Image 1 (tube, rainbow, N blue to C red):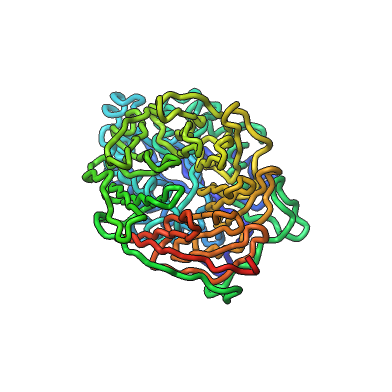
Image 2 (image 1 turned 45 degrees about the vertical axis):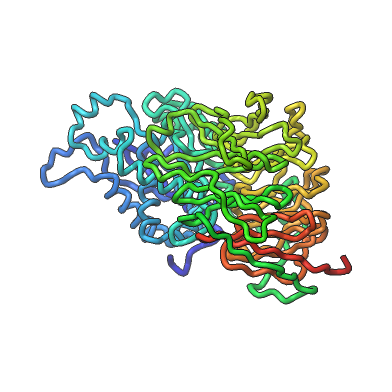
Length: 592
């Protein structure tokens, strides 16, 4: 990237589709040129050859793999002046973008993708297209781009699998992963790429007016297509200067706390690390996430490449992992994406992802497990096509909140396994869900931006206005024990504290943006908020003032889960192939 790259401007790379050219974007780029809200946006048109056939025997039609490599070079050489990028693809162009991103990750260039702030697809055949299949195979025999558009094409399927695993569901920037939000739009009357193919396994999907080509031909700024694209591009722009800038509704008019140094000075008596317990006995691969019961007596750890779930009895001095799920890796693997305990810890509910392929067209189910016998209790069929993007168990034990991608939130009775209520939202897809301590309120966040909303679960009605402040999807939500405060962590690398009564942000913690926060936990008295990071740092914050308290706890790897025991000691579970649990007594500070 060149030294003159401008942090204040956004480069938007447009990639056209099959049998098209960069001129297809003229209606949109013309509107951008006259839009004062997007005056810092620079359209960058990527062009490649796409035709029915090639009459010149000395030339050939490029495959999507070749086009993806061309796009990779375009990003390297033609976008040097931009530190912020967005990628926009129509039809086949979306497949080109996915192929390009997958190949860059394969080259270990995940950190180079960090400047891509968002990817937007219009009518992209993520599951391929059957439209005119017989005609295409006969007339376009030998056209490599036509072959790549067929359903279940192996190379495209593999590229989408990498994108889903290492971008859409990623939580940190590494050489092989980079979290980037995707927004996917289908055409209302599109019979070439129907909504089911456009949706595929992406969580944030919406429908816009128009057919396959009309969806990207808005004629005014009020057209839904342009309004949707503008909203996503505005989210990619850097925030305006703090001095004199307007403060969004729901936030506070105060600058963020200063960023901490890598080795902060001790501000109060340091924490006491009582024990460090390695947990041996079962994981063959890296642990992807973990969760404690509310009383801290049981820990569940979830393996990644081999989808193993182990339950650990934390009351035992030397806990051993009891296998709950020990499934062999299959071609259409069963990676777990969500898991929640019932309030008493007797039931564990799991949701899983799938690889693109035949499995994506089967019903999506939750699995209920008896943690005492480690045997399945049954299933809840929650969706025909959409994967589960949010899952929460009510503290009252009477409700499960399930948010399938691109659908409303459904409340289920976990005993009868019947749906009892539907909570509607305008998110497209929910990213995270959490019940209040009394079980009367549910909060959920949007996958497409940082918006959050609350509902009264007994009536199904929204509570107040949306909570606005985060500029990227919120990945984690926790309530304080008394339900008065809400803490959130998001992809924008901030942690914020909210007043539940006023629905306003009251604090923004000074977390280091270079060290992504993976886990949050309030202390039992609600005075402190603990954050655990990808770099293995547990930090104690004063929930009332947002100030750092005491000395950080440094551990051996990413902190995947935090919980407090009934006695008030903190349990921090870390990743790696052998999980370790650190038991920590935060020493009193400032007189408390």
